[in-house]
Image (cartoon, rainbow, N blue to C red; front, side, top):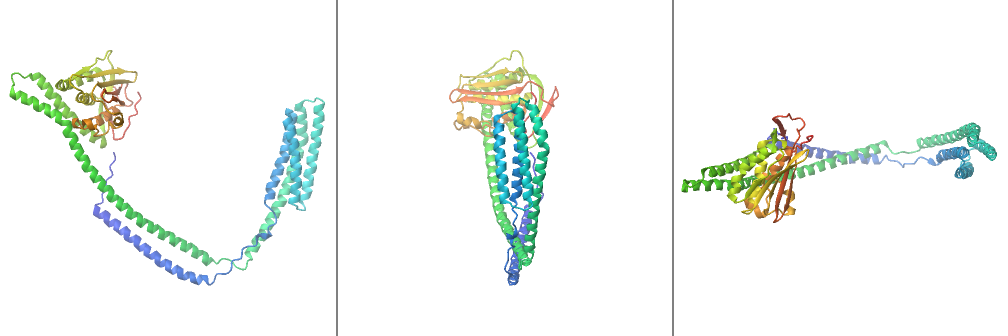
Length: 496
C-alpha cells in the first residue's frame, strides 16, 4: 500500500490556506470596484446608442431549396433509367411497374419545379431535359419490341444501356446548368442583402458590445470566487469531520484488536495454567509427555495468534512473503494433527485426519498452511460438544488439492456466512470463544497461495470449511523454495 507523506506541518498548511483565503477576498473586492466603474461608464455609452435597424433581407428572392429540388429530380431521372435497364436484364414485373411510376413522378416533379422556380434561362434546359427523357422512353419502347420478339434479356439490356448512357450524361449536364443558374441567382441576392446591411443607417455601437462582454466576464469571475469561498468552507468542515471519524475509528480498532487478542489467548493461557497447577499439585501422577504436548500445543496456538496479527499488518504495509515448496499434502496434515491433538483431547473431541492415498503433491508454504489448518481445526473443536468428532479429509483434481475440515457443532446462520472471513467477525452466540481474526488471515493466506476457500454450514448441524492449494507450479516460481510476495490488495493470477 502506497503511503503519501506530507512534509508540511499543520501550522504551515494553516498559514497557506489563510493566505489563499485573503487573496480571494482581495480579488472579490477589486472586482466589485471594477463593476462600479463599468456601470458608470455604461451610462456614458447609453446616450450614444441609436436605433438598431435590421438588415433588409427581403431582397433575397432565390430560394436555396431549389438546389435540393434539382438533386431530387436528378435522382428520379437516374432511378428511372436504372430500373428500366434492370427490368430488361431481370424481367421483373415489379421493376416494370416501378419504372413507370418513377417516370410519372419525374414528369410531375419537373412540371412543378418549372412552375415554382421560373428562371428565364432555366426554362430552356428544363425543356431539353424533358426531350431527353422522352427519347429515353422511345428507346425503352424499342426494347419492349425486342422482348416481344424473344430477344435474349442480356442483349436487350446491353442495347438499352448503350443507347441511354449518352442521354444520361446529357441530362446530368442540363441539371448542372440549371443548378448553376440558381446558385448564381442566389449569390447575387446575397450580395444585395450584404450591401443593404452595410448601408444601414444605424448599428449597435462597438462600445455596447464591449460593455456587455466586460460585465459578463465580471459576473462570471465574481460567481467563481464566491463558489470557491463556499467550497473551501465546506471542504474544511469535511476535513474536520473526516479527521474526527478517523480518530474514532483508530480508537475503536485499537480496542477491538486488544479484545480480539485477549479472547484468542485466553483459552491457550488457561490450558497452560491448569497444566502447571496439576504439575505442582501432584507431579508423580502427571503424564509429563501428555502435559508437555498440551502446553506445546497451547504455545503454538498463542504463536499462531501473534503471527496472524503480524501478517495482518504486513499485508497492509509491505506484503506477505510465501516460501513455496512442492510437498506432499499428508506432511502438512500430520503436522497439523500433531499440533491440535492435545487441544482436541482437552475438549473431549475426537480428531480424525483421513489418510491421503495415493499421495498428493502441492505447492505451498508449510508453516502458513499449518496455521491455516490450526485455525480451522481449533474453531471446529471449540464449537463442538464433548464426544463429537472433527474430520479433516482431502480430495483432489488436476489443478487443486482440496482440504476440508468438517465438524458437527453449532453451525453458522446463513445470513452471517457472507462476512465470516472479515476481520474480528464472530457470531453473537459464540463471541466469547474468539474474535475471528484468524479466519480473516486464513482467507488471505489461501488467496495468496492462489487457492480459494468456501464454507458450508447449517445452524445446529455443523460446518464444513474447504480450501484449495495449487498442484502445479505457479508462473514465475522456481521448482524449489520459491519466494512469492503478495502485497496489499494483490490478487494472484497464476497459471494452474
